[in-house]
Amino acid sequence: MANAVTNPEMIALHALAWILGESGRANRLLDLTGLDPATLRARAGEPALLAATLGFLEAHEPDLIACADALGFPPSALVEARRQLEQA
Image (cartoon, rainbow, N blue to C red):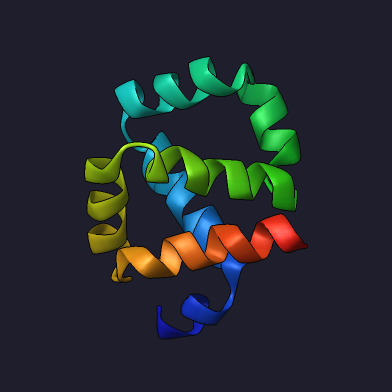
């Protein structure tokens, strides 16, 4: 997954998949964003949604660290990806 470190979209999509892999975390994301599953699927490639996904992880450091570990990235890579996506 080393290539994905330079691709903020891929980092965020992998993070989104990680979030959605656990129902409690997935429900919390939907509750906090106000999105429904269909809208989330339809907008999954949008930089703003991807940045918000990474921001969701940043807001709860244990999830940020667990996701980064699961994806094989340092947490700072997820934070940097969010920053890049917000500038896109």
